[in-house]
Length: 169
Length: 169
View 1 (cartoon, helix red, strand yellow):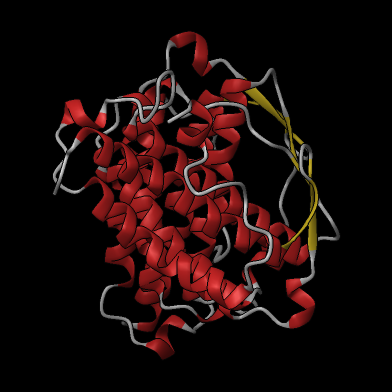
View 2: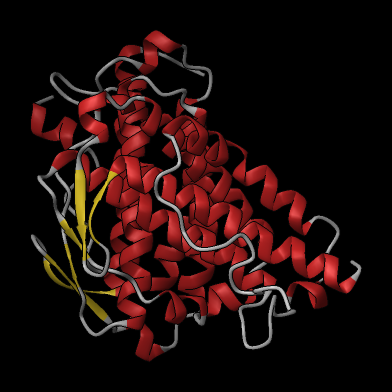
Protein backbone atom coordinates (compact mmCIF):
# COMPACT_ATOMS: atom_id res chain seq x y z
CA UNK A 1 0.00 0.00 0.00
CA UNK A 2 1.51 3.37 -0.93
CA UNK A 3 1.95 5.93 1.87
CA UNK A 4 -1.06 8.16 1.18
CA UNK A 5 0.01 10.75 3.71
CA UNK A 6 3.61 11.12 2.53
CA UNK A 7 3.40 10.36 -1.18
CA UNK A 8 6.77 11.94 -1.99
CA UNK A 9 8.46 10.88 1.26
CA UNK A 10 9.38 12.90 4.36
CA UNK A 11 10.18 16.61 4.39
CA UNK A 12 13.53 17.68 2.98
CA UNK A 13 15.27 20.92 3.88
CA UNK A 14 18.57 20.47 2.04
CA UNK A 15 17.49 20.98 -1.57
CA UNK A 16 19.72 23.59 -3.29
CA UNK A 17 18.15 27.05 -3.26
CA UNK A 18 17.97 27.38 -7.05
CA UNK A 19 16.04 24.15 -7.32
CA UNK A 20 13.66 25.12 -4.53
CA UNK A 21 13.00 28.49 -6.14
CA UNK A 22 12.00 26.71 -9.33
CA UNK A 23 9.52 24.61 -7.34
CA UNK A 24 8.10 27.75 -5.79
CA UNK A 25 7.73 29.37 -9.18
CA UNK A 26 5.95 26.41 -10.67
CA UNK A 27 3.80 25.69 -7.63
CA UNK A 28 0.74 27.74 -8.40
CA UNK A 29 0.44 26.35 -11.96
CA UNK A 30 0.95 22.88 -10.51
CA UNK A 31 -2.00 23.27 -8.13
CA UNK A 32 -4.21 24.79 -10.81
CA UNK A 33 -3.47 21.83 -13.02
CA UNK A 34 -4.00 19.37 -10.15
CA UNK A 35 -7.60 20.53 -9.54
CA UNK A 36 -8.49 21.36 -13.14
CA UNK A 37 -11.93 20.07 -14.10
CA UNK A 38 -12.87 18.73 -10.65
CA UNK A 39 -16.47 19.31 -9.57
CA UNK A 40 -17.61 20.24 -6.06
CA UNK A 41 -18.19 16.65 -4.99
CA UNK A 42 -14.71 15.70 -6.10
CA UNK A 43 -13.21 18.76 -4.37
CA UNK A 44 -14.96 17.68 -1.17
CA UNK A 45 -13.40 14.22 -1.26
CA UNK A 46 -10.68 13.49 1.34
CA UNK A 47 -7.34 12.75 -0.30
CA UNK A 48 -6.98 9.81 2.12
CA UNK A 49 -9.33 8.21 4.69
CA UNK A 50 -9.63 10.68 7.56
CA UNK A 51 -7.59 13.30 5.70
CA UNK A 52 -8.40 16.77 4.39
CA UNK A 53 -10.58 17.23 1.36
CA UNK A 54 -8.97 18.50 -1.84
CA UNK A 55 -10.62 21.86 -1.08
CA UNK A 56 -9.05 21.99 2.37
CA UNK A 57 -5.65 21.12 0.90
CA UNK A 58 -5.83 24.09 -1.48
CA UNK A 59 -6.92 26.51 1.26
CA UNK A 60 -4.24 25.06 3.55
CA UNK A 61 -1.56 26.01 1.02
CA UNK A 62 -2.51 29.66 1.54
CA UNK A 63 -2.64 29.31 5.34
CA UNK A 64 0.76 27.71 5.41
CA UNK A 65 2.58 29.91 2.92
CA UNK A 66 1.05 33.09 4.33
CA UNK A 67 2.60 32.17 7.66
CA UNK A 68 5.82 31.29 5.87
CA UNK A 69 5.96 34.65 4.08
CA UNK A 70 5.43 36.52 7.34
CA UNK A 71 8.18 34.43 8.99
CA UNK A 72 10.63 35.30 6.21
CA UNK A 73 9.91 38.96 6.79
CA UNK A 74 10.42 38.62 10.54
CA UNK A 75 13.71 36.76 10.00
CA UNK A 76 14.98 39.55 7.73
CA UNK A 77 14.17 42.38 10.12
CA UNK A 78 14.78 40.85 13.56
CA UNK A 79 17.52 38.65 15.03
CA UNK A 80 16.37 35.02 15.11
CA UNK A 81 12.81 36.00 16.07
CA UNK A 82 10.68 33.40 17.82
CA UNK A 83 7.73 32.25 15.70
CA UNK A 84 5.01 29.94 16.85
CA UNK A 85 3.67 26.90 15.05
CA UNK A 86 0.06 27.54 14.03
CA UNK A 87 -2.65 24.93 14.51
CA UNK A 88 -3.02 23.93 10.87
CA UNK A 89 -5.71 21.39 11.66
CA UNK A 90 -7.90 23.98 13.40
CA UNK A 91 -7.36 26.51 10.58
CA UNK A 92 -8.41 23.87 8.04
CA UNK A 93 -11.67 23.33 9.93
CA UNK A 94 -12.70 26.99 9.80
CA UNK A 95 -15.56 28.08 7.56
CA UNK A 96 -13.39 29.51 4.79
CA UNK A 97 -11.19 26.43 4.39
CA UNK A 98 -14.13 24.04 4.39
CA UNK A 99 -16.43 25.86 2.00
CA UNK A 100 -14.93 28.57 -0.22
CA UNK A 101 -14.39 27.97 -3.93
CA UNK A 102 -10.81 26.79 -4.51
CA UNK A 103 -10.45 29.58 -7.06
CA UNK A 104 -10.28 32.10 -4.21
CA UNK A 105 -7.19 30.49 -2.71
CA UNK A 106 -5.63 29.59 -6.05
CA UNK A 107 -5.62 33.33 -6.76
CA UNK A 108 -4.08 34.19 -3.39
CA UNK A 109 -1.52 31.43 -3.70
CA UNK A 110 -0.45 32.64 -7.11
CA UNK A 111 -0.09 36.23 -5.90
CA UNK A 112 1.65 35.19 -2.73
CA UNK A 113 4.15 32.87 -4.43
CA UNK A 114 4.94 35.60 -6.92
CA UNK A 115 5.61 38.07 -4.10
CA UNK A 116 7.56 35.60 -2.00
CA UNK A 117 9.79 34.43 -4.88
CA UNK A 118 10.66 38.07 -5.63
CA UNK A 119 11.64 38.50 -2.01
CA UNK A 120 13.74 35.31 -2.03
CA UNK A 121 15.44 36.40 -5.24
CA UNK A 122 16.47 39.68 -3.65
CA UNK A 123 18.38 38.00 -0.79
CA UNK A 124 22.13 38.36 -0.38
CA UNK A 125 24.24 35.33 0.69
CA UNK A 126 24.33 36.79 4.19
CA UNK A 127 20.54 37.12 4.28
CA UNK A 128 20.02 33.47 3.27
CA UNK A 129 21.75 32.55 6.55
CA UNK A 130 19.32 34.59 8.63
CA UNK A 131 16.92 32.48 10.65
CA UNK A 132 13.82 32.36 12.80
CA UNK A 133 13.31 30.19 15.85
CA UNK A 134 10.28 27.96 15.38
CA UNK A 135 8.45 26.72 18.47
CA UNK A 136 8.63 23.11 17.27
CA UNK A 137 11.42 22.98 14.68
CA UNK A 138 14.02 25.16 16.39
CA UNK A 139 16.29 27.41 14.36
CA UNK A 140 15.39 27.51 10.65
CA UNK A 141 17.57 29.45 8.21
CA UNK A 142 15.95 31.00 5.14
CA UNK A 143 17.93 28.48 3.04
CA UNK A 144 16.21 25.69 4.92
CA UNK A 145 12.89 27.45 4.82
CA UNK A 146 12.82 27.86 1.06
CA UNK A 147 13.62 24.14 0.66
CA UNK A 148 11.07 22.99 3.19
CA UNK A 149 8.24 25.02 1.64
CA UNK A 150 9.26 23.80 -1.82
CA UNK A 151 8.85 20.26 -0.51
CA UNK A 152 5.53 21.34 0.99
CA UNK A 153 4.26 22.35 -2.47
CA UNK A 154 5.24 19.05 -4.04
CA UNK A 155 3.90 17.10 -1.05
CA UNK A 156 0.38 18.53 -1.18
CA UNK A 157 0.17 18.65 -4.97
CA UNK A 158 0.93 14.91 -4.91
CA UNK A 159 -1.98 14.35 -2.48
CA UNK A 160 -4.32 15.63 -5.14
CA UNK A 161 -2.73 14.07 -8.21
CA UNK A 162 -2.44 10.63 -6.52
CA UNK A 163 -6.09 10.79 -5.46
CA UNK A 164 -7.07 11.56 -9.05
CA UNK A 165 -5.02 8.64 -10.27
CA UNK A 166 -6.56 6.23 -7.76
CA UNK A 167 -10.09 7.41 -8.53
CA UNK A 168 -9.51 7.50 -12.27
CA UNK A 169 -10.53 11.19 -12.41
CA UNK B 1 -0.81 71.41 3.92
CA UNK B 2 1.25 70.29 6.92
CA UNK B 3 3.03 66.97 6.86
CA UNK B 4 0.77 65.52 9.54
CA UNK B 5 -2.21 65.91 7.22
CA UNK B 6 -0.34 64.28 4.37
CA UNK B 7 0.42 61.34 6.59
CA UNK B 8 -3.13 60.89 7.89
CA UNK B 9 -5.29 62.25 5.06
CA UNK B 10 -8.51 60.60 6.25
CA UNK B 11 -7.85 61.24 9.92
CA UNK B 12 -6.99 58.81 12.68
CA UNK B 13 -8.19 55.24 12.83
CA UNK B 14 -11.93 54.80 12.83
CA UNK B 15 -13.35 53.06 15.85
CA UNK B 16 -17.11 53.48 15.43
CA UNK B 17 -17.41 51.65 12.10
CA UNK B 18 -19.72 48.64 12.13
CA UNK B 19 -18.66 45.27 10.85
CA UNK B 20 -21.00 45.23 7.81
CA UNK B 21 -19.65 48.61 6.69
CA UNK B 22 -16.08 47.45 7.20
CA UNK B 23 -16.76 44.32 5.16
CA UNK B 24 -18.25 46.35 2.33
CA UNK B 25 -15.28 48.69 2.35
CA UNK B 26 -12.85 45.79 2.33
CA UNK B 27 -14.68 44.26 -0.59
CA UNK B 28 -14.36 47.47 -2.59
CA UNK B 29 -10.79 48.21 -1.52
CA UNK B 30 -8.87 46.33 -4.25
CA UNK B 31 -10.82 48.08 -7.03
CA UNK B 32 -10.25 51.46 -5.37
CA UNK B 33 -6.53 50.77 -5.03
CA UNK B 34 -6.31 49.66 -8.65
CA UNK B 35 -8.13 52.80 -9.74
CA UNK B 36 -5.83 54.94 -7.59
CA UNK B 37 -2.71 53.80 -9.44
CA UNK B 38 -4.25 53.38 -12.89
CA UNK B 39 -2.15 54.87 -15.66
CA UNK B 40 0.83 55.84 -13.48
CA UNK B 41 4.25 55.23 -14.99
CA UNK B 42 7.29 53.87 -13.16
CA UNK B 43 8.71 57.22 -12.21
CA UNK B 44 5.35 58.32 -10.83
CA UNK B 45 5.08 55.07 -8.86
CA UNK B 46 8.53 55.78 -7.45
CA UNK B 47 7.47 59.18 -6.08
CA UNK B 48 7.08 59.50 -2.29
CA UNK B 49 3.51 60.32 -1.30
CA UNK B 50 4.89 62.93 1.14
CA UNK B 51 8.39 64.29 1.85
CA UNK B 52 10.39 61.36 3.32
CA UNK B 53 7.42 59.06 2.98
CA UNK B 54 7.11 55.77 1.15
CA UNK B 55 6.89 55.74 -2.62
CA UNK B 56 3.53 54.77 -4.12
CA UNK B 57 5.04 51.41 -5.00
CA UNK B 58 6.03 50.85 -1.38
CA UNK B 59 2.57 51.89 -0.21
CA UNK B 60 0.92 49.23 -2.38
CA UNK B 61 3.44 46.64 -1.19
CA UNK B 62 2.85 47.60 2.38
CA UNK B 63 -0.89 47.06 1.97
CA UNK B 64 -0.36 43.56 0.60
CA UNK B 65 2.10 42.56 3.33
CA UNK B 66 0.18 44.11 6.15
CA UNK B 67 -3.05 42.39 5.13
CA UNK B 68 -1.10 39.13 4.91
CA UNK B 69 -0.28 39.61 8.59
CA UNK B 70 -3.94 40.49 9.18
CA UNK B 71 -4.96 37.24 7.52
CA UNK B 72 -2.77 35.23 9.89
CA UNK B 73 -3.91 37.18 12.95
CA UNK B 74 -7.57 36.70 12.14
CA UNK B 75 -7.22 32.94 11.77
CA UNK B 76 -5.06 32.69 14.88
CA UNK B 77 -7.64 34.55 16.95
CA UNK B 78 -10.39 32.23 15.74
CA UNK B 79 -8.66 29.04 16.84
CA UNK B 80 -6.51 30.05 19.83
CA UNK B 81 -7.29 31.95 23.02
CA UNK B 82 -5.99 35.51 22.77
CA UNK B 83 -2.76 34.49 20.99
CA UNK B 84 0.17 36.90 21.14
CA UNK B 85 1.13 38.47 17.82
CA UNK B 86 3.97 40.85 17.07
CA UNK B 87 4.00 44.11 15.22
CA UNK B 88 6.54 44.24 12.44
CA UNK B 89 8.95 47.05 11.89
CA UNK B 90 9.56 48.04 8.38
CA UNK B 91 9.11 47.49 4.72
CA UNK B 92 11.79 45.41 3.06
CA UNK B 93 14.11 46.98 0.47
CA UNK B 94 12.81 44.75 -2.33
CA UNK B 95 9.42 46.48 -2.02
CA UNK B 96 10.92 49.55 -3.66
CA UNK B 97 11.60 47.68 -6.90
CA UNK B 98 8.71 45.27 -7.41
CA UNK B 99 6.41 45.42 -10.42
CA UNK B 100 3.21 46.91 -9.04
CA UNK B 101 0.98 44.07 -10.26
CA UNK B 102 2.54 41.60 -7.84
CA UNK B 103 1.36 43.17 -4.59
CA UNK B 104 -1.81 44.44 -6.24
CA UNK B 105 -2.90 40.96 -7.34
CA UNK B 106 -2.01 39.54 -3.95
CA UNK B 107 -3.97 42.25 -2.16
CA UNK B 108 -7.02 41.67 -4.33
CA UNK B 109 -7.03 37.89 -3.98
CA UNK B 110 -6.36 38.01 -0.25
CA UNK B 111 -9.23 40.38 0.37
CA UNK B 112 -11.72 37.98 -1.22
CA UNK B 113 -11.00 35.29 1.32
CA UNK B 114 -10.88 37.71 4.25
CA UNK B 115 -14.22 39.19 3.23
CA UNK B 116 -15.80 35.73 2.98
CA UNK B 117 -14.37 34.82 6.38
CA UNK B 118 -15.54 38.06 8.04
CA UNK B 119 -19.03 37.50 6.56
CA UNK B 120 -19.19 34.03 8.09
CA UNK B 121 -18.42 35.15 11.65
CA UNK B 122 -20.81 34.22 14.44
CA UNK B 123 -21.32 36.79 17.23
CA UNK B 124 -19.02 34.71 19.42
CA UNK B 125 -16.29 34.68 16.77
CA UNK B 126 -16.49 38.45 16.24
CA UNK B 127 -15.49 38.99 19.84
CA UNK B 128 -12.54 36.60 19.79
CA UNK B 129 -9.23 38.34 20.38
CA UNK B 130 -5.52 38.40 19.79
CA UNK B 131 -2.97 40.37 21.79
CA UNK B 132 -0.81 42.64 19.69
CA UNK B 133 2.64 43.53 21.04
CA UNK B 134 2.06 47.26 20.47
CA UNK B 135 -1.71 47.70 20.27
CA UNK B 136 -2.84 45.38 23.03
CA UNK B 137 -5.98 43.27 22.90
CA UNK B 138 -7.96 43.45 19.64
CA UNK B 139 -11.13 41.61 18.61
CA UNK B 140 -11.63 40.03 15.20
CA UNK B 141 -14.29 42.66 14.56
CA UNK B 142 -11.86 45.46 15.42
CA UNK B 143 -9.34 43.87 13.08
CA UNK B 144 -11.85 44.01 10.20
CA UNK B 145 -12.60 47.66 10.97
CA UNK B 146 -8.89 48.41 11.17
CA UNK B 147 -8.12 46.73 7.84
CA UNK B 148 -10.91 48.67 6.12
CA UNK B 149 -9.61 51.95 7.54
CA UNK B 150 -6.06 50.94 6.67
CA UNK B 151 -6.96 50.35 3.00
CA UNK B 152 -8.68 53.72 2.72
CA UNK B 153 -5.87 55.46 4.59
CA UNK B 154 -3.15 54.27 2.20
CA UNK B 155 -5.26 54.49 -0.95
CA UNK B 156 -5.88 58.14 -0.07
CA UNK B 157 -2.13 58.71 0.18
CA UNK B 158 -2.03 57.84 -3.49
CA UNK B 159 -5.12 59.72 -4.63
CA UNK B 160 -4.19 62.89 -2.74
CA UNK B 161 -0.69 62.89 -4.20
CA UNK B 162 -2.25 62.61 -7.67
CA UNK B 163 -4.48 65.56 -6.95
CA UNK B 164 -1.65 67.68 -5.59
CA UNK B 165 0.55 66.96 -8.59
CA UNK B 166 -2.26 67.12 -11.12
CA UNK B 167 -1.74 63.52 -12.29
CA UNK B 168 -5.22 63.01 -13.61
CA UNK B 169 -6.44 59.72 -15.00
